[in-house]
Length: 336
Ligand code: KG4
Ligand code: ZN
Image 1 (cartoon, protein in one colour):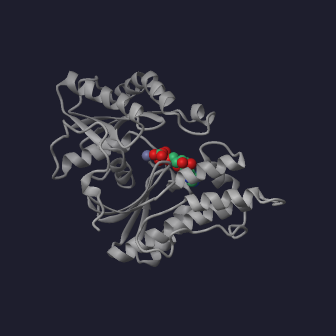
Image 2: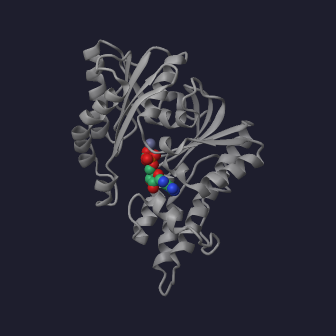
Image 3: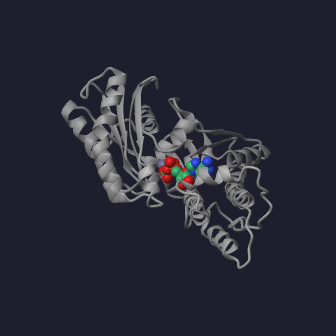
């Protein structure tokens, strides 16, 4: 079986081809980061126009690498949500069109399923684990039994972790995306220089909150007469996010008894955050795995992988009638 998958949920135009053994036949990705950097964030209308322009060449590159024609695949997949509606439409419509032309099924993939699969690429199953998905749009904690059996334990009540990085970087004039810029600027800084809040650490449950941290960071920067060493400030902010994520991860491992934790999404690129999560997991007797660098931020390989996992799972029937914009899958509603 061969799969062609498309991802256009946010600011990456991506396509990938995979065979049933998980062998990557081709992959191409174009990031719109530079364009959105001018606006300090992603502009949905501009993103969807760019996807429209870039997608034919991206698909063409993947077909060339795979040595296959547009109608040669057994399954066509695309991210159908969550994401920016006009951006999702571009990729999902293209994949549906290709599937119709090839008279093959279309499978709608939930973007989060892709992130959840990414630390385990190219395995054909997901092991039981606690998953932390932290990106610019999401901060989610799942209790995963296997593919399609993921229970949402907690989520951010306000900003996503990556969004907090982006907003604080903007305050500091460090540019977009803020995560890599803050990580770089934090190098050599003192993580204890600024006393920033670790929200929700003492509240029950598994939810996150980053808006208080963002406000505290702004107030510290705007304090009259404050002299801020950027390295110290960035290191302190990064440490506060790391503590918040690692604390919740440890609590989830403790509560479920799971011995494996996995991190995915753009924020898992942060070395200090990975390190703190690894230490927290080890303290609970668990191992931590993270997606490979090239699979951490949005890409189509993880979407193709999720489609493959779905094909192998009990939910084998492709979702011909998947809604274009499904909200969180009912399977993922909290158990509580
Ligand atoms: O997964 P991703 O590409 O997009 C979404 O699905 O949102 O993640 C992008 C987010 C941005 O907010 C970016 O600032 C953050 O991930 N990010 C980082 C790092 N690299 C990317 N955050 C902290 N440290 C990093 N090194
Ligand atoms: Zn994502």
